[in-house]
Image 1 (cartoon, rainbow over the protein chains, first blue to last red):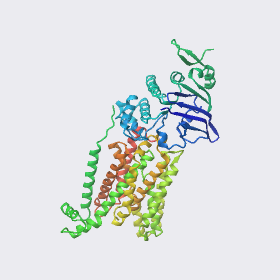
Image 2: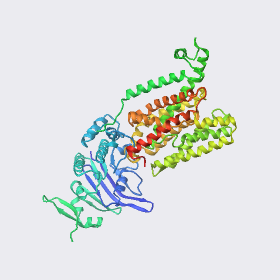
Image 3: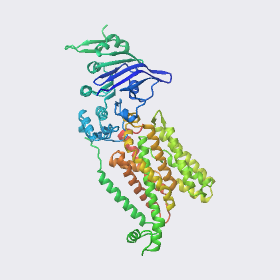
Image 4: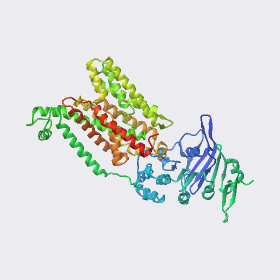
Length: 253
Length: 343
């Protein structure tokens, strides 16, 4: 069954500051949508808006046609899961207990199976008896992702999921994300690494000063002209020897 | 690899149950009038109607010891459960009814009632304590939260302010009170089980039972809240309504406990913390084990209060604070070492 999240004309104003202005974004089953843009462009605010964290000033977010503002919290939690940037857990819960929290909206016969599967998939099953606080940042990120996976939702919203991972962890993490997409889930991820977006995203959305300045297929959207303009830095797009595009800062005179 | 050390739940449950039964027996037997164990068991066996047991022992047991022991159980478990819930909803092991000022608020209510002569009405002081505790709970909640988050420093500072205010009101009360009133006021501010009667037990026990039973409903939510308000909401928790309900339960438990016995410091802080070290932080187990340990700890503290300087009786709050304050400092130190303190 296919699920879609559609956000139309999303505007968010805090005080007199317009954080998001008329942003349209959507994701379907089988899509990996990357949200890109410089710091302060409104990426995390957009993710919060899609998650239903706060009321919107304008526009609406709907999952399968249901406005998320009117969905019961538990029903919404069965449709979309959110991975925040960093999670501080206040008491010494074990990894398994943390992952089990992902089952909160369900609490059914599948709980144990889903928890086990999520831990195996993120390769944290060997850590399951350790307390979350004793883990490295990279391990904590994987545990949090396992918790998100245990929630077993068709839509996943990930805020900079790879920010604290080294290159090996990042590749393994993205392989998991891609397999989720392949099995029919929809992922929207805020990303900083443009090359990661180029390789993994089925679509990219570029934010700049709270507005969506481009969206579409990565190779078409991520052009030197657009990137140089958005990041205030001359950027070029090269090719590797096997013909894959690589985005680099351009220091040639 | 640092595996989390957890003791088996069954072992802990059995230990706590045995500890509670033993402390109850010792408490029932000891005091100014000692009841030998054989006599004690005979009295218990006879029930309320006296068989061939000693008349004095029988009366001491039924009219003095048993209501006192039952009240200690009720109050101890109420304070411990209130501490567990409060630490859970504020996501902080320092929060408890006494440190954040809920107990002091209740004591102020009681003291004001004594001074204005409300103590002529049956349970008038208890009612005032209940109102005072509930009001200060609401105050703590409103003052220490901004933008949907609880600021820990603000929480503790709010507690300091309420405690200071309470101290001033109690000091003023002592200043204007006559001798009888001073005794009552001292009782509220230092806590004692010395005035335990079946009437007091009857007033508090239903509230405590209701509060503890409702608290079981929060166990899963309290676990989820450890992830922070935002992630809890993503998992389908209605964070604000749940928090308000939980605060109301804390107000109910702490206020009714203080209403019956005055301020008893540190039980609500120390007990949940010990159980968390032993069993881990899952609230489902934490709540009922803390209730059991809270009862035992309060009984033991009361036993110390009435036997250490016998026949004189120390205020119970003095004993719990003497033991609790150093523990609190150790807690601060160890947390500082393991987490760099609470920012």
